[in-house]
Length: 308
Image (cartoon, rainbow, N blue to C red; front, side, top):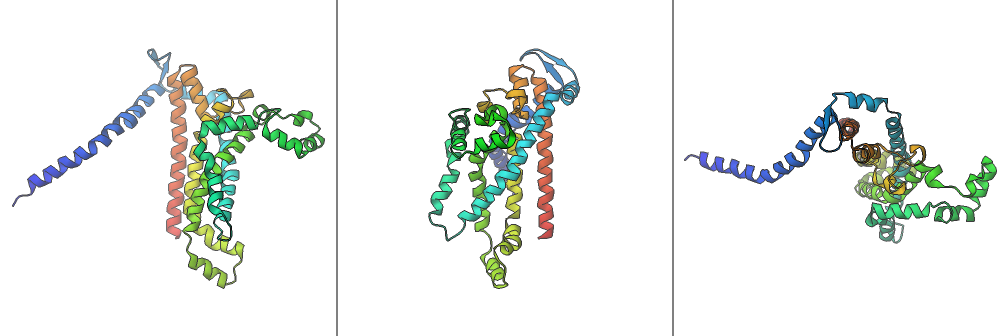
């Protein structure tokens, strides 16, 4: 009995089921990529006027000091997330994973709750907290005498009323992001810690390993794959930073572009100045950086699998 008709119907049925995804993928992924590559080779004057310039957009981009400042600011923020935010998230996960801690569920909800409020709301609260005179941060520093101490140490009376969003833009962004994302990353680490093999911990304890020994030889190796993923996720999110500085700095890059990120730089050129070609070139540079980070993660993941 021939099964050619049955097989052909299965093939047709498979393509019918795949059709919605393929249409959406072609319309919202493939076409925009092709269009952005075409735009990157053109200089645009509004939506209807284009002039082919080849690689000139990329040449102008590389020679623009504002672009390099945006790159620098973005990587400072990313390093702040990597070396400040993630270690705190891991330490919180360790603390909240302890069975001796009462009310662990409530603490987890408290630390994760900024994610439930949304980025815009958190940004507005952050702007109020870091306000120059009446902000919560300055009031707390004044009450603790820290501002007076900083004036005495540095000899600079600007610490009496520090304007965080003007003088310490990147530090402010990192601190607000710490409040916003530390609980989010904590959840990943907490899930990894709960999957650590308890028998390995018991064996390490029998062998005389203390808390540091168990952390170094059992917990760290067990959570390493998740840590690699969280680091990559944090770096990609940091390089795509836009909404937080846009809201805090009122759509500008701040004084002397201290808070300008690469995505804000793209937005300013594409939508404020109307040069979508130059903005597309910026987007492709950012895409290449993100692809490079993804390749690094693949390499690290494969190295972990070989060593496992």
